Image (cartoon, rainbow, N blue to C red; front, side):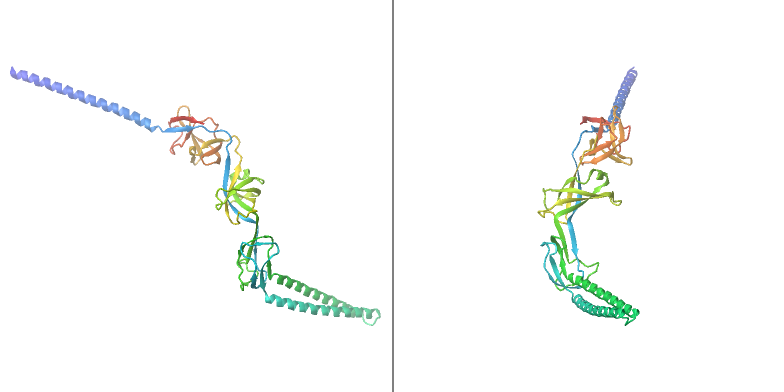
Length: 381
């Protein structure tokens, strides 16, 4: 009887242990299933990008276009030697103001001087021969009227006089040419301005007609300056003659200079895709210098009916500039837009939007149409 009682007790204990283990396993499985569901739900929620949306802004915005410009003198002339010789004296140096016709340097050209002396002597000989030929022709005409000589002989003397006259004229032309060449021994300023370069040295040999020769002087008129700017084709229709602009140079921080656009090339350079324009600026105080680099600021009118978006809202894809619009169901829709002007923080949208859309600011690069999005904040205008 005792053995049977112990056996029943052991069986009951085993059954209790089995049920307890089964309950523990069931609770563990249930907990793991619940945690799995929670993890899956959290993963799905985390997979939805959280975005901030903005609405396009309407209304005009101030716009400026800044481009590099090259400052040049209104007139600039390199002065070369027009005759061979040596520099005897130079009378001005860089930075000196000169007037039109003022002597810059004097050359010695002994060969030209000798050629002129010889040409003058030849001219005097030709004049003497012309005078004798004229006297002879007149005498023969007198004799012809008295039938003392034949008409053939009189015509020969008249022809000789005409030939001697032509020779005398040729010699006179040669004398004039050499006098002009001799005048090139004195280098003069073609207009009023300042001397911006000098390479003339006393005793230096100068040769005319040498394309590789360095100019002896450079004279520049800096009372008024030209500024050349290359404007991108997309902005070329918005700049025109008469437009007032401002410019700055590195040596005068904080100071602006006024200039006026006077002409445009009217053609796009196929290599750079720009249009060359010319500005002019008064330089009475000589603050601006020829050859300087300047930053030119063009005021541009606001585009009509343009919308503005932050530059961070634009995605650049193969199809062109693109924005991401969030629809009512929270789905993404990619929309291609056309950009008018890029103003840095904001860009003008001239086509592709109506103005009431919710546009994602800083959208993920991998976003596609139909993706679910979670909007973090309300649209801000």
